[in-house]
Image 1 (cartoon, one colour):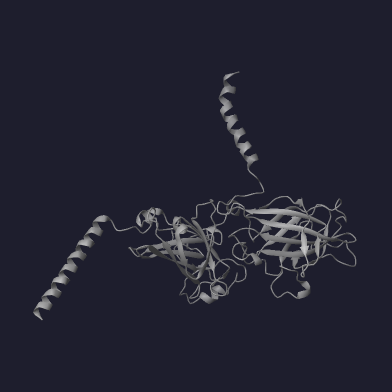
Image 2 (tube, helix red, strand yellow):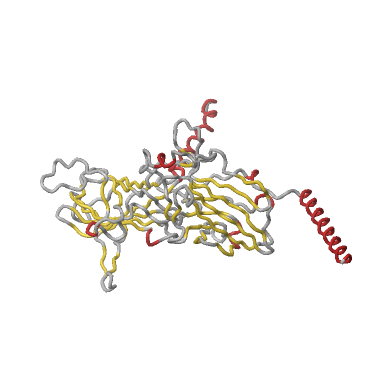
Length: 452
């Protein structure tokens, strides 16, 4: 073996290891440490055969504990395996019809090889509805509202084959919400779905069922941060604001006019101007430029308990957040006593370690976070029981490790900026002053009594 081959061998091994790792990484699955088994499962049920195809029901189940799909809603796409067309739909619609010029008489609903389907809006006529449709594409998380974590539409497919052997599953399924982030695997044939009649006396099943699993990755989403965290406490006058430029900067040349001052005389004109219905954020001009700020205030200290106030403020003038939620990581959630005015569920992503909580609003009370303005905030207080083995106010222990709003990781201040306890010398000085003050008051009282 010559010298050059010996010199190249470590490099060759590194390259080989790199490509081996790429092969091992699953392309259609992601991993969320807070929700390891969370996914959106799409069930494609063929219910009956037609002259040139079938009638199918497509149902999406959001099995993610805390991540939901908010307005403007989901868009489901795929590529047909053959030359299929969509004759008609109920509970959904294709965004484009495509070229249907070769058809005479009855024109299909969609002739595109790669259709994109969206949900219908609330208020759709009943004859165009199907169960679990028509919510504008909004899909709740499974833990927060399982009844509304399901979406369905019916599709009549032509030119597809009319038997289990001739029909083909759709390929290259995509799910946008509305942006990227979800990766969907290949359709897999599974046992037929079972359906029970309303009176419970009859059971039917689909003729054929495919399952498609979609998982979310923040890496694939590549989103700019959408929230940040500020902090304060009763034992320190310092208020730690969100880090500067957490979600953007005011003097951003590439996005001029992306914020407006709260007291600007042109505020309403800006809100109702171009982009009003585009869901493009128009935020209040701040140092952090985030649509959402979560404030954590260590409020009170009792003998056996301590209390925190959590406030969520919306700085986005163009967005109401329906069914918002927070996920907070803090070690004292294993000794949670009470949460006021918010719903609570423990996520327990690490088995027996209960340090992660999901909070969301009470229905019809504060489950809607209004747009920026006087009503654009929700707040609650949390009462924790102290654990003598772990509780402390020192070294920033009282502050959360991470906070997520609607599934997005919020930008935290650097730990060295957290409001800290006064140092021991100052505490000692305060104790001495307090002791002298109490002694003087006691002496003055005694002198007054004697003089009386």
